[in-house]
Length: 180
Length: 231
Image (tube, rainbow over all chains, first blue to last red; front, side, top):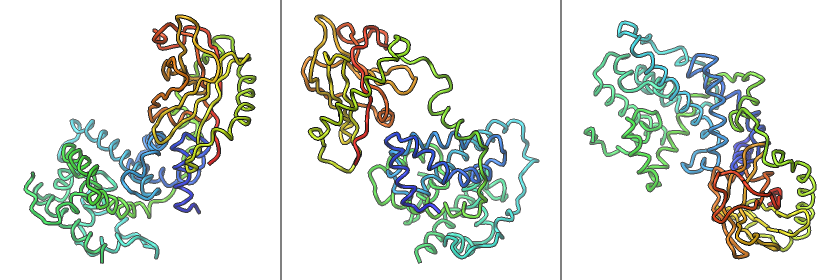
């Protein structure tokens, strides 16, 4: 099991152009990041392309990873998640002309909301449980499916401003719960 | 803007940014503020850490076996063009030059120790086979500069010496014309810095002001490999 220090050391070596470090980082993290790409994109070929691009981004951006103060694994997860969300949104934008409003995605929260939790799971998941179910689902859909306020408003059949207010309140509640 | 009145606005805004809910303009404005506001940066980092927990229950999946090759190709470029040295029929020179530069490196390295032992320092001894031109290059990470010291030799009359970075089989990239003086500092763009270890530095004979084509046009006078001096 890789420690955060292992990942951090590998990132530091990446920043000075050490290709062996990229191989090491790939061995330790690619299955996790590929899982994220598959979850977000739900398409194997596209997830493979995304993963390739994610590691190129990691290679080129390793020198800047400290800039925002993220822990090394969170930085890697965030690079992968953001890149896949960008791809997903581009795909949605490209197909927007083809889809009609009649084809709304399933409004029910996915089974992951009921997933069995291990004892080490982050507090966020406990705090999400304190939110009304639909509001917790909205946070998950924004993070894992890149849904925008407009997407969420359509999905939950509420006006855009209502959705925005809901989500902002949810974030405030989450932050208060997380800092308890 | 957009009528936010909540006193916890920044914490919420950082969460919206982490979730990707801001419009492109709002996101850019947030990023600009984050540059100068450590509190905002910390608020974002907190959300990024917390939200990453949403990936905890995602199963790990092994990527296809050829993925490392695909990544390497995406980083290095798909086609490997013949390098400058082989194009000029100078491939034979490299092993000798590298060996010579390594030997020179071990001899002179004690004098060249840089005080900051934190970052492994990079340096190269760029030498002509007959030592008629000998230049040392040391990378100064703090300044993003390559410090150049010309220990022997000079440009031919009415000509200039131009320094090139050659990474693998890629086309040489000019690092600039060496000034008349023995000491010089050339700025190295950040994206080039990570290509330095193991790369070859070469000096070619060029018209005043440097190669007009962006590629070496004259003789390659000296070469040396960038080696890492342990932390």
